[in-house]
Every structure is written in structure tokens, then in C-alpha cells.
Amino acid sequence: MKNQYSTVDTSNQGIISVRSWASVADRISSSVQPLVTPKRFDSLQSMRLLASLAVFQSHLWTNYLGRSFVHPGTDFFIVLVGMVAALNDAGKITQGDWKNYLLRRYLRLYVTFIPIFLLYVLGGRDELTPDFLIRSFFFIPSPGRMPLVGPTWMLAMFLAFYWLFSLAFLSHKEATLIPVFTAWGVSCLLVTALDVHVSVFDKGFQLFFSLPNLQFIAGYIGGWLVRNGFISGPVSRRLLWVGILLMLAGVVVLNSGEHGVSLRVMLYGASMTLIAVGLASMERVGVDSASIRTITHPWLVWLGGASYVLYLTHNMILRIWDSLLPIMVWQAPLITLAALSFAAIGYQFWEKPVLVFFRTKVLGRE
Image 1 (cartoon, rainbow, N blue to C red):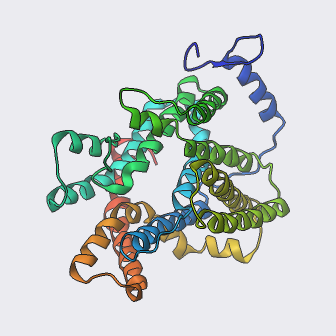
Image 2: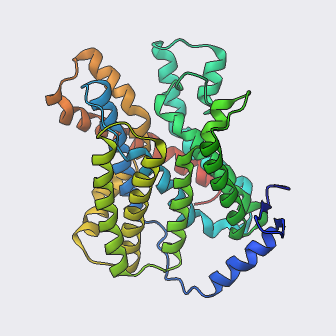
Image 3: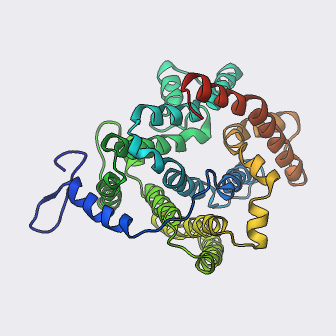
């Protein structure tokens, strides 16, 4: 690549500029007659909760009850990050407020993370070194070791996506993402296929070019299709059911023996994308169905707001519970209820008011 705004073409034309990509995207966009996009998709909020619950249940059953299970929760999270960017953030690209976008993303991650990080530090159960603490705090992968707050390993991937997505704000054009995401996706495929490694910071390199990153791109493309009204009500229903069937097939296949990351990305990445696109499209076009009424129920949507707190705190809840009362199978519903309750309290009385304060008083925007 000549620079971050160009990509290599396999034809004899050599380098294609963003202007060429932009002209293609502009022609596509000009033919689109978008519906009125909701300010917030309630279905996405609830889907975050389902993803977080899947991660929580996996850690509960695998780490404490001896029943390993390959779940689609992390894949669902990654897909949803891409979709949210396409549905909620892409509309601000033309404003070009690159700094504000990244500040909001970091604020969203750190408001809840900082107090939990401090609790882990004060807990003193892990061997702490300055290098490990710095890496854990800034979501920098550590060789041979998970971060202090274990689930935050995935936040390094989120930040990689946010920084790449932010390039569109610098150019004021969403079309910038075409070469950026193309180059990233192709690089992920090549690094995996050729088993490329680097001598310095290899763990971060592998994370940045890992196959699961393709799920960000799939989620963004799905969100773009939803936003521009390409998916009708009947089609959205079919996508939802195909996604559910593919997910169930993935659960059977991926829990039947050894498997590679590529198979997981194909089965869970594709199924989670279809499910998310199907539900979001049904919500947008106003499909009246039991699935939409359920996924957009006010209580489920509200609990969806607590999904990030649940994601960050569930390991801590499990540790504390197990130290007080050894975890057994019959306790699983009680532990789930306790974790959800703690997450809801943390969301309602810490995360939500602190985020509102910073967004309105510091950043000066709703």
C-alpha cells in the first residue's frame, strides 16, 4: 500500500485511489432511497445482552462446572460492533469530527472499566508488574498472559476497529472504508493462510490480523444494508431463520470435536450476522412478530444497557461466589440472577449517569 488511503489492485492498474472507490460508492448511494432510520435500534441493545450472557454462561460452565462449550457470544459482540458503527456512527462521518468520535469510544470503554480495574488491583489475587498493569489498562496484549480483567482481551480488537473506522471521519467520506476494510480483510486472510509472524509484538500483530476481525466487516456491511433499506420485511424474516438454523448447526459442529478458527468464523460469524441483520431490518420496517416484540421489550432493552458491565464483572462475580460457596450446577440460575442484578445496579447508578455527564457537560453533545 502506498498509504492508508490506497489499496493494491491485482490488475495492471496498480494503485487505486480513494477517489475511485468513492465514485463507486457514491453511485450506489445515489440509487438508494433510505427509510427513516431510528435513532437507536432497540433490538441491537437487547442482542448485546444475549451476547454478554453467552460469554458469562460459557465461563461459568467451563471454568467452574467442568463443561466446556464453544459459544457464539464473542462472535456476536464483534458483529454488533460493526453494525452499530454502520447504523449509529456512520451518519456523523460527514461532520468530520474525528477527535470527538474517538473520545466517545474511549469514554464508553473506560468509564466502567476503570473502577473494575482498580478492584482487581486491590484484590491482589494476580501477580502484578508495572508492565503487566500498563498493558492491561491500555488493552495492549501481553505475551503468554491474559489481561488483568480477563474479558478485556477483546477490547483490543474493538479499538483496532474504531481506529480504522475513524479514518472515514478524516476524509469526511464513508467510501474511505471500502479500501480500508478491503485491505484489512485481505491482510487477515493472508496472515492466517501464510502463518505470518513478526519478531516484535507478535501477539498484537496476530490479534490485529486475526480472522475474527472479518466479523467486524460483515457486521458493518450488514448494518449498511439495513440503514439504506435494502432488506424488506419478508427477506428479514428469512435471514433471521437461516441465521438461527446456521447457528444451531455451528453449535453442533463446533462442539463435536477439534475445529479451527476459520470454521468458527464461517459458522458463527455468518449466523450472527444474519440474525443481527434480520432482527434490525424487521425492527426498522416495522414487522409485527413475536420475535421483534420480545427482542424490543422495554425491560430486555433496559437490561441490554447493562451488557458491558456484565461482560466486565462476571468473572469477578464468579470468583467471589466460588470463594464463599463452591459453585455447583443447581446454583447456575442464582448466580446468573446475581450477576445480572449487579450489572443492572452498576449500569443504572454508575455507567449511565457518568456517561451522560461526560457526554453533555464535557463533550457538549447528546
